[in-house]
Length: 83
Image 1 (cartoon, rainbow, N blue to C red):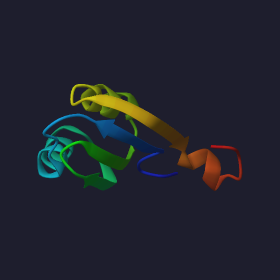
Image 2: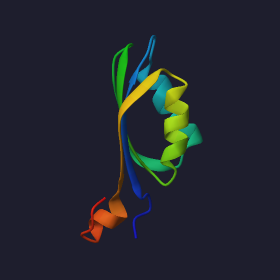
Image 3: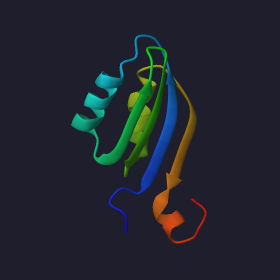
């Protein structure tokens, strides 16, 4: 079984977004791995493996509008099932 089950991806559209601040918040508040937070002050792409994707979504929503949300169950995928 995978340590972190859910591949969580989304876009955040907002103002004065900071990759560094987002990365710091994730590392201090969420358990997970494979974090990517890439973009600019108005649009950030998030990719993160976690067991609690709803917490990631709740936090990201405080930063701006979130969309293109994908949460895939990597454990199911590893077993050949739809994620």
